[in-house]
Length: 144
Image 1 (cartoon, rainbow, N blue to C red):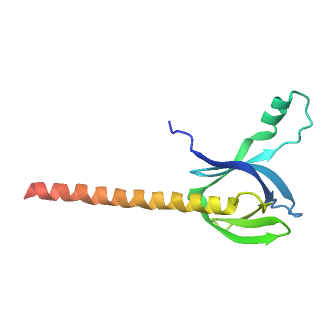
Image 2: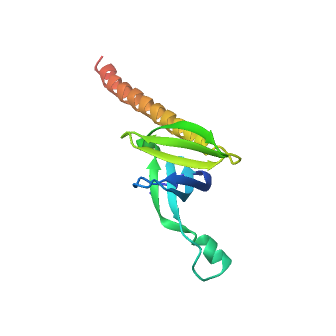
Image 3: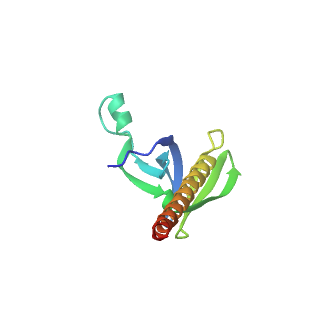
């Protein structure tokens, strides 16, 4: 059983839909050590207490953009008080986001988390190569 990934950032972003009209839709985004989870924002039209409305304001079903399938964070623009950026997946698919300029820099945080993830993967790959080459040499030494 694996432990849940550490949450780096949690907040709202707007994602451009991939449909014909390419509308901007608010998403609750949770940035973790493994990637970015996108939750649908529900309308608060249901009856109930304020805490019930707040806890159910976001859908439980999440789309996950995992760092292992992410290539880069690109294309940062500043227009009319908003920051626009693009997440490029390994397949070449581009996903556009925006957020208010006065907020914390989501694009930089995602890019840093992606670099951290890729670096950890490279270190792990190097360790695995070193261990496999060391174990093959151990057998050679015993024959001498």
